[in-house]
Length: 148
Image (cartoon, rainbow, N blue to C red):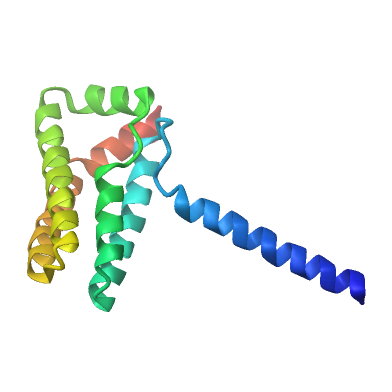
């Protein structure tokens, strides 16, 4: 019984430490990632922002927005795939990327200022930028990725 309790305590402490390390290193990944992996991380950042909006937790909003703006870099393979697939339309793709990064920073700044109206205004622009980019390019890039 004593060993079992000790085992459970060690297990709980280990899980808490791992969870803390994971949360404190959120998006502090410097290694390049595939586009679809980055998109999934950004989706999690949107969930963080949403939770912050619904709970009026400006720290959560700022954290999610900062993570969108500071996502890991795109791998060379993914960058080549996107460039090869889009060709001359790469400027359009880059425009969506710049819009999302710029307004994610604006979300963060509004959150720092506890300005929910600003957060919501900029959040809507970021969401629309993502939807527009996905509408324009997602299927084509997905097909190119799967055919490689």
